[in-house]
Picture 1 (cartoon, rainbow over the protein chains, first blue to last red):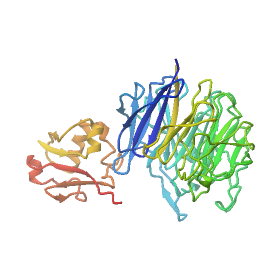
Picture 2: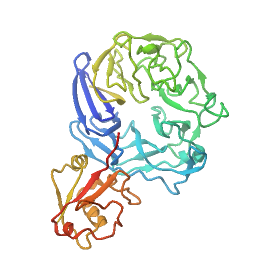
Picture 3: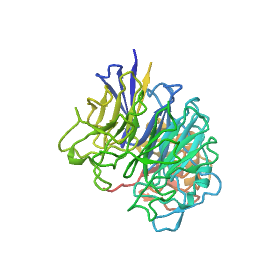
Picture 4: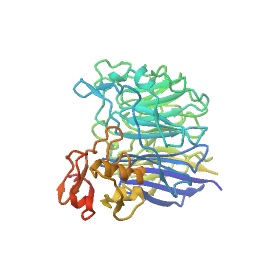
Length: 372
Length: 98
């Protein structure tokens, strides 16, 4: 019988939630790495027992952990993230050049074909890759070079590279997104990159609202069967591209607010998309104190609220950008975690929800593995 | 024999309980003690000192003999009592405030 394993990163440790395919009864293990910030935990698609975790601390810096047994035991891997060559500068808050400084790994994206190859998105924004299971990490420096990194400027949340999407139909193509810089794409395996932000508009944020870079992209998602179609939750605006990011158009439609962080796509329906509207960029909680996931079954514009089983009064949590995921069971499961420590799951594509666990530390990330 | 006390989270990371005891050839300094510590426990590299510089991380402190040695020259000899093993060299996570 199928199993589901939900990998949860929180402000004070990692948790592993497991259930059978019915997804009614859950076992909770953790905290792993208690007391440390776990920005992200993700498993290899080709070896699901191979997990990677980003563990960090204001005192002790960055650690990368690796498990070969599905999270039962862990070993520390390499944690040196040295920018390639001349470190260079980006713009600081006051507009002056500021040297790139490694702070933490936001996102780990294991290869679709090799369990020893993993991409890491880091703050200050750059992408690294390991090909030896995490022992050594090497920057793909073309991103900062070709992306005009010397003009990037951090926002209040830090200049993190938070999204890495591998195109399953084209191993040379990778999409990434960076807070306050935008989305970028490589078509040659990471040697060269170009900004893909045409059509994004950021009035009140950028002096030129149509600028090529500087847009605060919060998250991008794609469906593996149609990887040229991208869905984006921007700082404000939910966007879509039908041409691999060459151009974008808005699909916010009837959402109550188009601010938010995560966005994801149904495992079997490429036009079914999920977002969690948040009131505003300074009020990071759901509108009206009602936690609602919104689902579009039409690839955007027409959105329906999903609230059954979610708190509908006095709810003032946030859902962060990496804290939503879907499983690939026949009835697609959808999961998300909140800054209030709840992890909600739906075993029916979002129609109804249950709290798998309610009182974890603030949730930073949620990933799901569907196991045979 | 040099005695080193690590903060709880680094003990967990190193999978070590209690004091660490290290043989360190003279001169016994912050640098040589930490080099020996990281050679014994490679997973601690980067958690006490930056990989590259290798300066003390901002929120790490070094105490011995009830003195804060954090800002001393990393190549200065540690106190005699530490060199003799009478007193431990303490790696501390700085007070976070809040």
